[in-house]
Amino acid sequence: MRYYTYFPGCSCSSEGGAKAYNWSTQAVSKVLDFELVELEDWNCCGSTPSGSVDELGAFCLAARDLALAEKSGFDMVTPCSACYVIFNRTSSYLKQYPKLKAKVDEALAAGDLKYHGTVKARHMLDILTTDIGYDAIKSKVKKNLSGLKVAPYYGCQVVRPGFGFDHPENPQSLDKLITSLGGEPTPFPLKTRCCGGSLIISEEALALELTHKLLDSASSNGAQCLVTVCPLCQTNLDAYQSRVNRKFKTNYKLPVLFFTQLMGIAFGIDGKTLGLNTNIVSPNEVLDRIYNPMSYVTTH
Amino acid sequence: METEVKTDTFVDEICAIPGGEGIRVCIQCGTCTASCPNADLMDHTPSELIAMTRAGMKNEVLSSNAMWYCLSCYMCTVRCPRGIKQTDLMHALEYLSVRSGLVHAKTLTPTMYRLFNHYCSMGNLSELWFMTRFYLQTNPFRAWRMIPVALNMLRRGRLSIKTRKLTPGGSCQLQAILDKAESLGGAK
Image 1 (cartoon, rainbow over the protein chains, first blue to last red):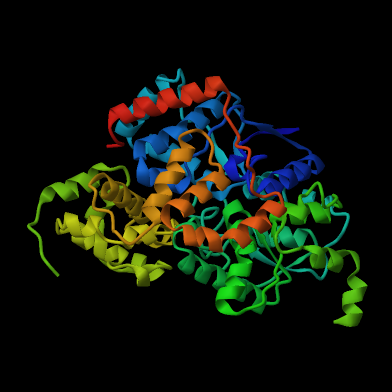
Image 2 (image 1 turned 180 degrees about the vertical axis):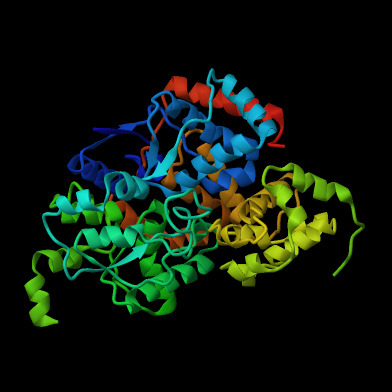
């Protein structure tokens, strides 16, 4: 049995907007037989904005989680791309900048904590494709996704600035994962282009434009749905899709699934467990294509 | 453009920030600018910001709107032929801009980041309260326009009124760490 320290992050926590990502991740882990042990009493990693407001404080937020995670000795896995970058960036900066490390150590000591720098922070996509592997995933497929065209959307931070497991501009892991489920990854030239991130809140117009480009690229390449590996990307593409349609006079109805939701569907897990009812753009047509493929062959 | 008296201290200040030291090796090739999805919205492009920083133009750099358009997509960082951490440099400029009170007046991003950090520092970001407070604080009319998006999310169970809380012990520990960090005065 493989064990990991699990860091859901605020968005994927049970009070967060991407709780379905958490649920589907847990469900998939049970099928693939690995154990996610949630980090006890974790705090928000600070994400990108905190570093711009309070640099040292931001490093300390992440360092507290790393120090807590170090006690178990397992790799720490998170489904969130932002948490993934923050933990890796903090770890590498603490190694690279001794003066910064001394200050972070001093702050941690005020909370009776010490971080020795041994935690390996990893993304859920890395765990599933590297540790578990495509063959093991394929062997658990009960409902082949044959004929389903899926746009693999990586976004930015899972592959950049780059902590190892896939190419920063032309990654393949998610494409291969879709193939191992029987689905067809569509060409998607913008697969690592930005969705607008948190600027969707403060600079909505520019973020909607970026989101629009992504939806346009996915749909013009024939995608019937998108999959994402990041809670924020999913929210921007899914919850703001109606805003994009309004602004650009388009009519996209592209379901945006967490990649673990798509895996769960292929593993035959029920929709409620995967939180499919929390998706804003209904994924019913995707399910229909999988469960009643014949109706699409005859009518389309 | 008004020119300012060149001071070395600004370059030193940037170089002392972890990740900022790269500005010394920039060759002004413009790869960062060409890779940036938002360069067209910036009053100074990412490569210009480095040139201006090296010229000591502190006020102009820190009052620029450029860094506030950074999406943290790290495209510039992975493409820089000199290995400069351009994205981290943008974050450092944001931080210095806030500290020096030179924040570009027209962007709402600093307010958003400040609120975000306020919630993070308590241990957990509550999306509902963070967003509601941001819209009400900056432009209640926008809050009104966001109601359909918010209702959709509420209906699908994606906005919780309840906030996740750390244990009392964890909360105190986090506060003690952050208080100590504040007393140490910055990451330099």
